[in-house]
View (cartoon, rainbow over the protein chains, first blue to last red):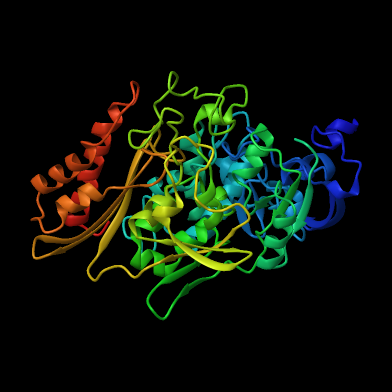
Length: 184
Length: 329
């Protein structure tokens, strides 16, 4: 792999003062790596660890295509420096299941045609997994009527809670349908 | 991005001491704003001091009824905290109206307070901006002003503060707890933020070298109801054109307490004291609400392209207060 690609677009820092040693677990595999401090978790995953499920869309926290489960919760990886996440447990969309045994949400996206080009899909699926955990834990959203009661699993709630994942193909109705199926 | 050194602070004292030796260093917590600014070239710190791992992630109820919120509490955890949901609905809803689920899981309380304006000219290093590069001029004044201030702007800067959380905290009379070389200090949130004046590069009055360790919120008055309403260009995941954090106590159809702050309209969360004064002691009805909104908006100084925000804010104040009278949200 060319040098600049491997380092996420930067020439690697040559001085150890600008690098940090981190251990991360990605989809069950533990990696001990030295990272240039400028490298985000997204670039570490894609360029150094060959985990290509998280996608680089905007690279500015505005599209959600780089969403993974970070220490059990959904998180964007483009605005997190890898150096600050030593010990992180990361699950990408690829690590949620395997080809013979898809995660129920991945299966639901297939069943409902919840994508067109598919670029945002790994982020959508990770976000949906994290979002359903939040719903199950009784966390409210901005559209929840009564903050002190469990939120209803309505279409309005799904749309609000998934608003951090943009889909340029606008497959939103089918994404919502897929998530509704996975909730049943 | 220039190469930089990374130091993970192991205590508040360590963070302050390292920064004192390196005035060009900055603190890193959730990173959702700072990392973006480093990518955009807005800031080029040679050293990041990571304070995101310090043991400042607890929410505690103090004996005097004060809620003590650690600086590193994640926005998602604060929004979902049972005491915040039951006592400070306006704060919970403000947090939930901001960013997205996957960003709120990273963003911290202190980082949210210290996030910087989303003025497009501030974020574009090819354009003049007095906030980013003092003395270069303001590109917004003759430019795109839809998201800019209608209160408290100066000829040097018309940017608005982007936080929702801070607007609710302003309404709730929160105070900021910070540490520096001299120890622990407290400051009212209202004094923490400043108007741009001649120094728009300064968002806050926090001295350089100080580390925010907590935010504290007093117990709400008995019978208080509060909420947060945000108006924006899309239904979710967008910054406010205008927003209203409001808390009311209505006793036998008379308003006995009112606290209101506005977001998206000024360089800081805008405490609407004139509206509050018009409400307190008045009967709870539509006429009172409109009079109160007018009392505040009379002072608005809109710019050519954001006059709509005056009416929008007036109506949002009225609708938000009316909803508090009618129901729980």
